[in-house]
Image 1 (cartoon, rainbow, N blue to C red):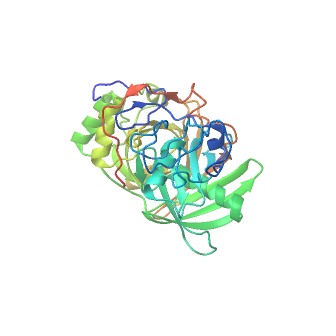
Image 2: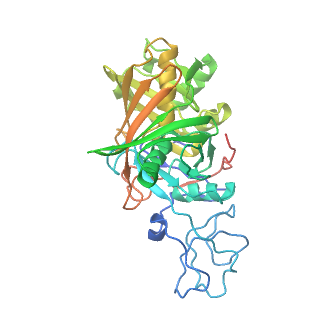
Image 3: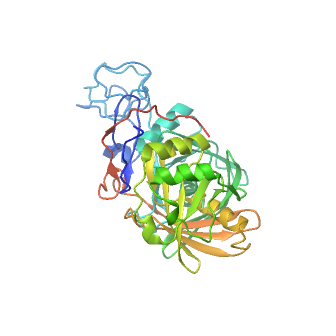
Length: 393
């Protein structure tokens, strides 16, 4: 696996123990977040999501015994009542875009208080987006709302684009205005608003900062990216930004360099998991107050993110630490260009945090970019030789 080449033309990688890696195409009922029929309902082929508590001879179950999505049985005495469970509704948004054809898709489960860790992980894996957010407590005015984030192969402490999607979902359900989310990295204030272009979400990041990137780590990073030091911008030293998660920041000379990205997936995945780097920010100046970025996400089993809010906050911390920007200044990041999913992230640097804003469009048809838009997010048909990563960070 270490020597396997992974194309930079967006491949969605989902890793399962001892199984071939395929992107999860969701059935129509799952896409709509439909609840399941009760046990014993008269249907020729149940096709229902099943929460496995035991073996089932005709169920194409996952190797880890989690949520499986296409039971092929005739539903006559095949499932004991304890096995069938209602599937929670999953809202779907493309964050940092006014169109579902752009941005970064995120799932949002508004009622997740009764879900176990394994159930949340299984749902996130089946949804297949880079992250799905779960509201694990009541939505009460004036009280922080607990939230957790799961990638297809593990939990992450914080996720920017799923937070933007959650802010918009709250705006739709509970009304426009301000809310506080309680994350594993502390409270995060969000706001939902709306204008003629659609719903917009904003978040105030956790405290931003930056630390040096060791020379040996930079060497390994460039090697895994299949780049040399010649691509580095001479005016910007590489560093490790923080805005809720750790993100190494590599500023390259120009946007054309970003288009050459064709990195070594297994090598970069191992490096990221060793250092708990959630994504890698590869970014180039594109004009006054404008940057163009790409964000590999091998830690989560994903080749690349088309929009990464936490990385945008980390980049603000990077610029602030290098004296490149002052509090109150703003800039824009364009991302997802090379993937065919254009995204726009607006960033304002505050005294100790960053304000990240963007639109979010409701996904109403299929699962753009994951299961249905193969020209953008291609299925990786490779054999998973590495163990799936399930640690929680």
